[in-house]
Image (cartoon, helix red, strand yellow):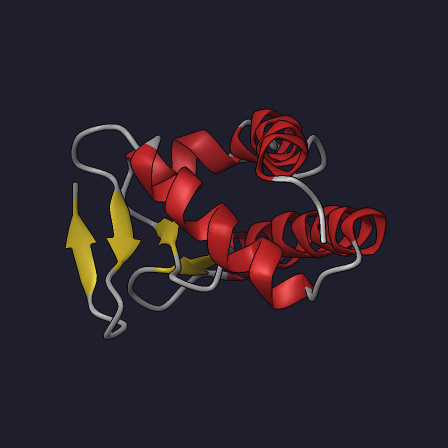
Length: 114
């Protein structure tokens, strides 16, 4: 089991990367989609459309989530823990970093604005 300090250090690196993930091939970035209320931070550690989603938003969600999943898996492997533990901690950190007006899912799966 990793120490709390090493786990925090690894998580901090993950969030600096995943928070600012923008997909160059997409016409809209993650931050733009979040600020427009199109996507939010799901309670799973991944993003999701807040209300439906255009093909462009669905593509953005898939690309960002695939990158996050790969990073979560790498962190989980390095620390010999389950990927779900990494994703759960990521969800907490990502929600805390949202700007006012951006969306997140509460523990019951309801969308809330920060």
